[in-house]
Every structure is written in C-alpha cells, then in structure tokens.
Image 1 (tube, rainbow over the protein chains, first blue to last red):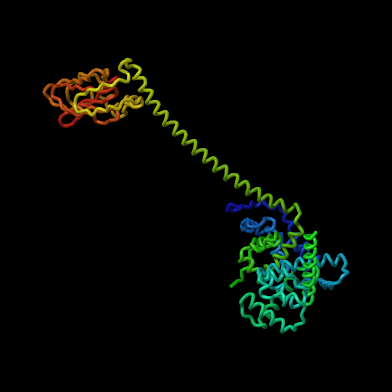
Image 2: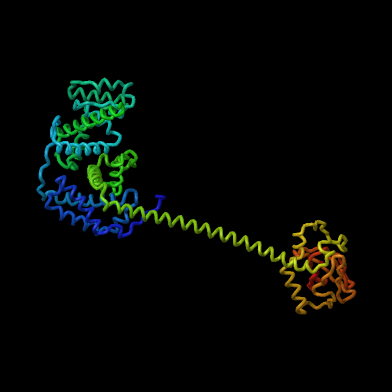
Length: 253
Length: 251
C-alpha cells in the first residue's frame, strides 16, 4: 500500500491467537485423516513451538502482499505439513471411503460430501492455469461425458469455424486410440501444434496423475484412483450442467 | 541444486486469489510454479479450505484489522508530516516577505521624518540648475523616488560619522563646512575648507554611493546645485587619500 513497508510488531499476534490458528490448521488435517485424532494436541503444540522460536523472522518476512491472518495460516500450515511428512510412517491412519456412485437418490450426507469434493476438484483445475479448459474438455470427451458449449468456447473461441461441435457435442463410440488421434488433430487446428496421439495420451495421463495426487492430499472424505476420479469428474460436469440450466431458466423468467 | 518452493506469503496470495475468483491476475511465476509443484499446490488447496471454514471467525479478522490500523496510522502520520512541512515553508515565506516590507517601510519612515522638517514650498520641488559635470535626472515626479533619495547609505554614513566624531584623518586642511550640511533645494551647496593654492579632489555621491561629480579645486571651496536628497561628499588629496567625508541634506 503506497509502497510502504509493513512493519509488524512482535505483539501483533498473541499466544492465544496463535493457539487458535494452530488448532484450526491441525483440525483440518485430522478431518482429512492425515493426522490421527490422538495426535492432534501434540501436533498443535509442536507447530506453536516452531512458530514461537522463529517468530521474529516470520513477522519480519511479511511483506503485506496478503492478509496477515492468511499469512499466519500459511506459515502454520507449512509447519504442519513438515510434521506430517516426518511422522506419517509411524501413524496408523484410517482409510477414507469411496466416492458414492452417481445416482438419482443420494442421501443428504452424500450430497454434501460430493459438493465439497467437487469444489476441491474445481480448485485443482484452476491450478492448471490456462490449460484448465483444455483438460476439462479432453477428459469429458475421453470419458464420453456431456460437454457444455461453454467448455468448448473457453478452449477455442472459434470452435464453430473449426467445426469442433461435430467432435465434442455429439455422441460417439470411438476407441481410445481413435480418441487420442482426434484430440491430436484438434490441437493441431486450434493451437497450431504438431502433437502425436501418443504424446496426447502421455500428457493426459500426467494430468490425471497430478489431479489424483492432489485430490488424495486434500480430499476430506474419499480416496481417489482413476475410476473414482472419473466418477467425481462426472459429478462435476453434471453439477455444471444443472447450474447452467438453472441460470438459463432464471434468465428466461 | 535445492528446489525452491513458493514462500508462505506467496502461498497465502494464491489461496486468497483462488477464493476471490482472482486467480488469473496472480503473477505468472506463482501460477506456473503451482501447475507443476505438488507440495505448494497442496498447501494452497489446504489453505483455501481452512480460510473458507474460518471466513467469519472474529478471532482472525482482528489481526487484519490491526494491520490495517497500523498501515492507516503510518499513512496518516506521513500526510500530517507533509502538511506540517508545507505550512512551515509557507510560514517562513510570509515571515521573510513581511520582514522585507518592514525594512522598506522603516527606510521610508526615516525619509518621511526628514521631509517633515522641510518647508512647504520646497517639499517636492526640485531645482533645475546645477554646477559642475553633474548628470541631472529630471525624473523626480515619483513620490517613492523622492523618499528613497533621503535613505541613508550605511557605509557612507559610517564614514561620515567617523570624520565628524573623531579627528581621525590624514593630515590636511581644516574643514569649515559642517559635517552634516543642510540646505534648501533652492540654495547652492557651498563646501569650504582651509588651504588655498593646494589642489584637492572633490567627490559628490548620491545616497546609493554613485559618484555624481568629481572635480578639482585649489581655491578651498566648491559650489554645486543639488536636487532634494541626501548626499555624501569626499575630499581627497592629490594622492587620492581621503581627507574628509561629510553629509549634505538638500531639502
């Protein structure tokens, strides 16, 4: 702000406030089953101790580019991750459940659970930056799921000129090999890049692996593999389609 | 080479950007790093969920309010400091300007006092004729110019006082003319000293120190017509040693 260096006093955060923040960070990992419940108090004390030892340095490093509270959370979170990495092997962590299958009749609990996971998946897509629209579109095509025009438009504004509707908005029964070939052609037309179908396959596998790792590291309820990722992705597109329909109805109304 | 992860503050920035739908405006070095780095990406995702859970918790928001308060205090102090400096500068300017006016009016007051002693007919009247090679200025209609014509010259004033108060001067003639000679503007100015047949140089200066007349005389006297004003005359020997300095007030 006005280029002023933010000077944080040593008493900017009291010990009680630090305890409150530390508890919130650790409890989120307990909920995710990354820390056993019995270890919650010990991990909380460990990160508080680490923070207090380095308090002067921590406060001195703050530049004011984010909120102070967010910064404190980020510091405590990183310390907590360090503790988990060091202690994980000695902990007996309970298993997460599988994601419920898409059905018309889901319980309220299941719906809430899935809603949280979908939110997480959206954020994971965001982390891919400009590639997020391409990833969504290609996986939707690959899993033969419903593609929205908005996905197509976000990837290629000239999709009508490039006749992408014919590929993505119509039902198909291509083999995996054919699908990678088609996607390689799409990349050539839209991005003007020469990419072999095998390179497309490898790229998509890499994206899927990254997404699954991030889901497993951050999901509260479910453990993910390729199949459960596909299930969650289906939920994600389904909720987007429902939301889009609602928006259109409201606009018409 | 150690792999460099994002700093905690960069992680905090990314999480805030994601929650506020501002991710696209994040610096590219942060977003590109998050695309590939699992550790940092996981930290951002965890932070997002923690922040969302605690969005309304007062225990946290007051920390940001404290920081905002500190920043506001700093900015306020800066603005007050700048405003105070500006006021001081303006104050100094007006003080200087005012003092300058006072000096001018002091000089004018002194001139006014000497003018009050003049006769009514001579006040403001300026004779036309002058003897000697004296460049006469006809432009005396300005009242300010008339007042300034009587302003004392500090250096010449000191010189004249020295010769009037103490006999400290080179050996020379006895000066008959008063140290401060006051005449009417209608009268001639007679300067007299003892020492016939000895040549002296006479210099008449106006009150700005400008030499008006330089003339030689071996008769022990010198005559000149001067317009109203204050003048200083000097008597010098042939070797340009100052023999005497006196004042002439022409009313």
